[in-house]
Length: 321
Image (cartoon, rainbow, N blue to C red):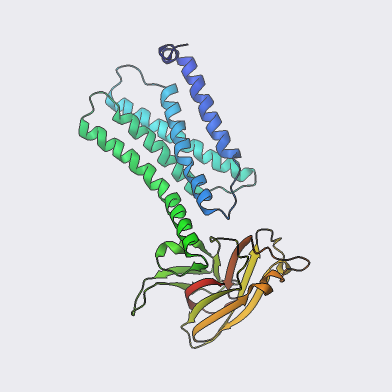
């Protein structure tokens, strides 16, 4: 069947369109979630919502064309309906994932909307009678949406390349992008401190709020620590009162049991502190097995049952040769 025959057959066009929408929807619902330890893959997984729901919008525009000679207002209305239908489909995907035991991410719906918006803007730019300035403005807006959605993926890839070059330094806060290597507990917030006072690097200011486990989690870094002697970090306690923290280190095979990881207690005195942890102790910490230094999953530094707000300033995390 020729292309012009497909275009002239409304039933066939709708069938093709609905088939594409159903396929995109099922893929979005049942696609496996990548490992939480692969940052660039996670970001790319998120970005795929943009082309996926852009394709949903394109399929709907193809399968449900407006009448010949429709007014510009009616064509605008059709684009709005297609956009709303694509976003609604994205919201249903998140609800289906939540019903299946997964997580409904509202940001995925935002990414779905960005893809659908890019598709309808590109479609509007192809209308006959559209001036060159408007046409290229619409296309530029569509491209800007896609680029904005891809930016987190590009940043993750760039920082992973930078992290491999910095290794065995895990973080020295030479730029704010390094904060993306960390996560914070619900009772804490991390802020980048730019270089100052003659220093050449920045730092991480960690605000700790009262709660059971305020702290940070270093989760994105080169994971093979074999052949390294120790893990160390420099931290300033700006308070006049010492603060006891726990350092938690686990591998990718961690069972979430307390005795299946390294747990070290350290007292951070007022002023600058240098904490050093021999990796031989880390390796032998789990009960009944060795922690796999080739597959280190993360490093946590947190207080326990904190009663009042505190701040800590981290300067560097590194592995010793």
